[in-house]
Amino acid sequence: MSIKQIQRFRLWLRQYPTTRKFLKFGIVGATSATVSLSVFWLMSLQYPALNLLSKAIGYVMGFFVGFTLNKFWTYIDQTDDGEKYLLKYILVYAITFMVYLVINFVFDHYLFPNIWVGIMAENMNQHEMAIWLEKNGPLVSNVFSIFINVFLNFFGTNKLVFKIPEPDHLFE
Image (cartoon, rainbow, N blue to C red; front, side):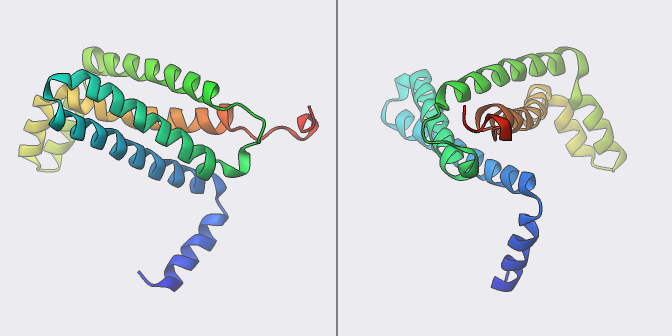
């Protein structure tokens, strides 16, 4: 990709601020997931008996990396120096986590997305993929739940945590 193409893409992207924020949000999510998994992996290599503690520490590290990057990069134009964002961020992520669990449960026990995605794969002559999908229901449900949760987290952080104040409330 040439520098000119990158510049044109950046100019085009400026026309769509929500899309731009969503891309940044995705990069932050990938970065925080990488940190979380790396911390877990390194700790589990060093202390194999502390598997659950390693996961918890990795999750917390990834959470704070995500919060910091979102505050100072994704939503930099929506932050105020005196405002407290961490509690709102924790609240949004706690609520969306509960929603994620409910969605996952509904997919696993009532909707079975692995079956209908498997049928779609079968209709496209992807027989091995269809068999794999039908055997891996919880994984397929989890992928669908994560996809929905990404949008809920983006909406929550964009509209509730790092919201732009209304013009008549700027000086309150």
